[in-house]
Amino acid sequence: MAVFRIERFTPLPAAEAWRRVTDWERHGDSVPLTAVTVRTDPPTRSGTVFVARTGLGPLGFDDPMEVVRWIPPAAGRAGLCELEKRGSLVRGRACIDVCPTGSGSHVIWVEELWVRLLPRGADPLLASGGRRVFGRVLDTLLAD
Image (cartoon, rainbow, N blue to C red):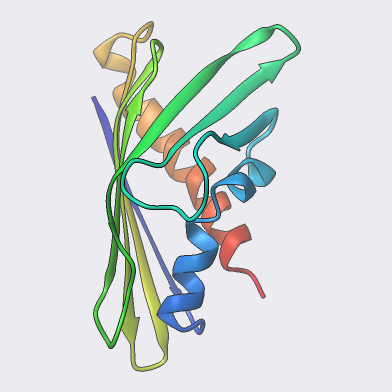
């Protein structure tokens, strides 16, 4: 299982950073050949399901995810979102924390990925790629 961690500091208040990093459809804007579709009615909560479809035409794969823990930031308290990846190709968990700071907020994204067709020896390469891809996603979502 590949594990990676990404951190970003932003001048955005925690509530706004949270709103942006949990705007699931926008995650696909920064990942080539990927579109994200939310399959449950808003608002996001525990039980929300969304799918990241990566591919070109019929060639691709679905990465279905479910929000299993949803605690938005409030009154100086950090927000926490936990996701489970439940696809036939990609499995794992992701945890997104948004912590208020004196000058904005601190976003921490930790992901554990298992890709069915990759040997364990590829985990360091998968983690490195994950840091780059999801780092770009965070950078885009948090940009002014």
